[in-house]
Image 1 (cartoon, rainbow, N blue to C red):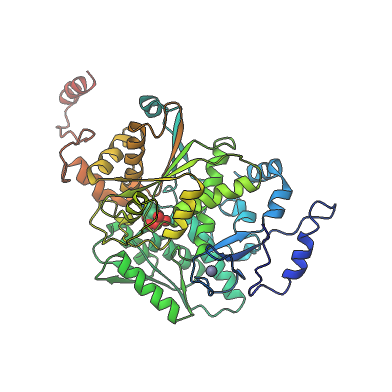
Image 2: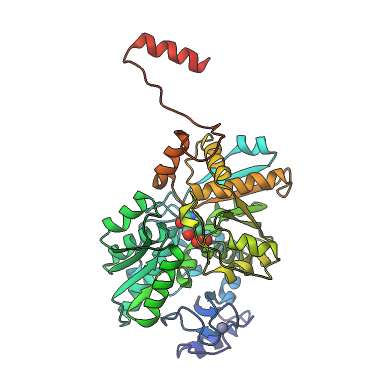
Length: 471
Ligand SMILES: Cc1ncc(COP(=O)(O)O)c(C=O)c1O
Ligand SMILES: [Zn+2]
């Protein structure tokens, strides 16, 4: 596939780069790593350094398209060796799991523009006991929430904010960055933009996010605008604002720069599994940028020759906010936004996901499915897997509940392997965890509930109680 050719608003030196690229395999060096913005609908291309969020020709969503030729030319073993050698190198920027793979992210970024809080390189927890209980060969949880602001949003924000820094250095007039958020996006944006010295505006749905999520952007000094609406209402406002004012830069995942960082989760997962991937990956979906990011990572791994077969993907939605699930039931022939209802998984309470077309593309490419989980299913699943040493947030609970359904239905077959993408840290959602263990949720089965044992500070009483508890 020609990377350059639809020829719209490309930088002047593209012609030379394209000519270089044409010499691939003829003994001359392969072209430099480079990327453009590209429309996912009509393939129109735009310079990466333009401030543009949708295709000017057809209004389609954009993606960052990497020239595959130098990626292929380097060869699988050389990529594996390079990424392995950078892992564990704590120096800037290799200490970041995103920038240690920078050729696949923003190949032309200058180190001085990189704003990093050491994101990525998150743990991959192996759950052999649960896998064997379920009849799976292996089960992993990719802990994307073990990160600076406690969610996977850090992966994308380091890229977006670093890109903003390089835009400002090129003289682009950016007064502030802005996002609508169901809690985690604003926490990450505020932390990275504060480090870059860029003012931040966040639009939050009043009363619909956790206390920790509200405190995070406040602490970073962001302008926090708490609107009497839901996430979708906030999204409409920020789209409007950034369309009408070029000096305010849109930081939602409609902006494909975010996806570039988020896709490193696929590369990391592959590297952590010895350059292999599981049969299934299950990921919670809200605005649906992250599932597309997952797919983009698999594409590059294939392009580099590192994998020949990608996993199947399941997007897990909360039943209260399930527009993708409903559309999947029609074979994606119909799509209707829904009014997202109340859910414990508040960060995926999204009724009109911006990245719906991206998600459909990814699900078609990776033989994907969509499942939904009820409130009691998600709470029980989170608590059940906590008993294996996790501390699951409710969104991971949605993905785990769908994984349990898939095992039950035989969709994940006996002997297969699966990885669940955990998107946030449970410590951001202590209200949810507390309500479960105090049996204050609207459900009847609290099998995994645990409570403190009140005792006098008395050795005999402690001994007696321990004998009872330990049997
Ligand atoms: C914790 C958490 N999980 C999952 C998601 C869903 O990701 P996406 O909106 O990219 O589908 C979000 C954000 O929306 C989130 O904050
Ligand atoms: Zn287009």
